[in-house]
Image 1 (cartoon, helix red, strand yellow):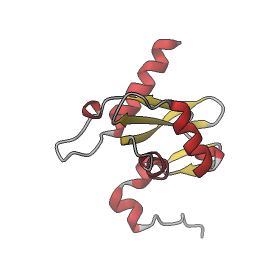
Image 2 (spheres, helix red, strand yellow):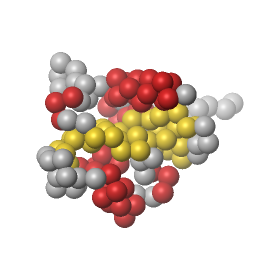
Image 3 (cartoon, rainbow, N blue to C red):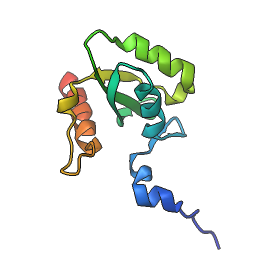
Image 4 (tube, helix red, strand yellow):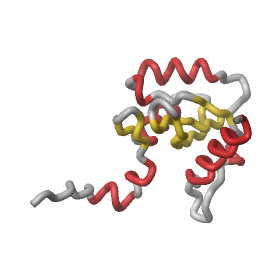
Length: 126
């Protein structure tokens, strides 16, 4: 008899598996990327979501809020390059104001809304 590997209790309890990004057969947890981005002293908010990718299946896209407007995506890409494996690096970094992160009534970022923003923008550009 073949049985599926049971999920870890922590994945089910916190919903981590729901936000798992599968890129090129590798698993990426958004929290890993967010932790690196939030380590930058001028980043005050970050959320990473998945986007459809024709080559890899899915790819990470980061939404970042900064304390000032002087931070560029190249600086964050370099930070990710130094601290993350290549397949875990965001393919795109989008800057938004901290107040514009969509949040639930409990204050959690609504990742599904961010994913919709990415999908809608890709659909408009095609």
